[in-house]
Image (cartoon, rainbow, N blue to C red):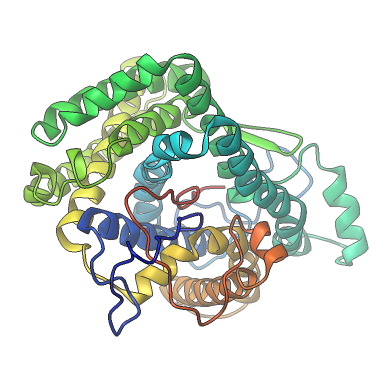
Length: 441
């Protein structure tokens, strides 16, 4: 994605007629395509959030706690329960997948740039888009949420109510500050405890021949850090303080996944877990089946625990199955991507290059389209498809435009890109930007 280095002319691969690199490394190309798929799924997740069968009959009050419109800004009376299953699956595994992808080139980049330059670069590329998203994009996105129940729909009245909120709405932008915090943690670990990082790299080296053993180990650590937090804070509790939002039970889980990704990517993507002929890609059917089984296990225990909140063992089972579903979902996605995604695609290549920008820019299009369709007599599936199409295409086009100028490119975490220029080759030693940001909220 953004922040990939340019290969010198003597090292540059040929470019074929489609404008894609002709000799891209298979694993790098597969994971690059996966990033493109992930941002498309992120937009779809938000697009259908207004049509979940589990939503209440009426929209949430803009001014009153617990401010649940932060997660579901628009509530439509047309519903489809299939969207609940889709969003639940994405909420379980897609977040961890994005932290995983974000970390793959972290250590090579630290070594190439030096820690100080790396942190300065990450602060600019994550902090500035986060400030732009929270300070500019979110007020634009949230205006229809206020209008739905407002007696005075004027923008001036909206701003009064907006500024009176006890927090700054983050929406999906919370991912950026939390990724920046974990990046700082990883850099500190690499500086002050390099043996710990070396140990992670050595463990990851065995994943090529023993992916299941690596999966079991990573899942066990995920359980250790997630289950106590989920029992202490509950799986749904969020807190907002000023411009910062956090889901109490998950930061440690995200940190574990990020560190695992840093270890796996330290020696390049063409060896270890992501080697094209490794067992992960070879047995993709098993990993995909395991991901589906993990999700089914979690959805069953989660539903059972909600019906019986007085049973502690059910809460534990739901938390354990969540950790299993998270890691198995990541491995299933990697396996399928490595098996089928190692081919050049202009569409997914463009989505990958513009993923960060699409993330920062897509939310206003989602909320405004959901608001515009409130009074229309269309099936929920049709509404969801329309919101998705408009938000995807508009944010994609706007991201391309933003990346064409220096200032606006910085606002979406990138560097200047000239429209119409042939995409630059990216190699396994280059660093993607922050992955493809999250989903919920």
